[in-house]
Length: 114
Length: 114
View 1: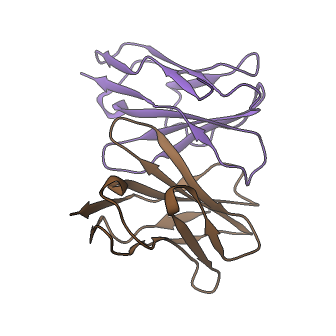
View 2: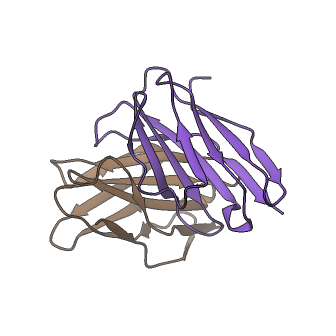
């Protein structure tokens, strides 16, 4: 079985400050981790993924995420937040034994304020 | 556009009616997925196709739910005798087929059962 936890329902940050959205996971086998963003009335948009290799992965719109195997975490980060980053963020996992299906967390609402 | 498309975008059904939701994946994508997203929740896996073969239907909540992809391209999710608890956004996604490849999502169909 595979699962994802996003412990924060909402994260508030001031524009220009760094942001972190937390994610922890549980899988059998090697994990493949993803971050998606969802804007109102729109589908999920892919941001970045970790497959193997370098633990720091870079993605779209200046976002990056750090894979930490010992802590089973994959936190999303951005050095300087923009108001336009305000959206709903989902962490998702699949694995070598997961059959291709993604298991999503419950989502974290990011609010970036001026 | 070259993205995943879904129709209709919105569907209102009376309890007990049958509905059919359509998904047009990205051309050439062999894998197609259906997810159900309840209000305030992350997407939950329903079923998965590789070409025309339905490889996993473990997420379908009841035998009222049926999905097909007869020619390995367009897919239809059918819900028979709709119930109020079926109200949700139904998301379709496609990918190139490898487990570690990102899935590209459509805008979803919002189903409301009265």
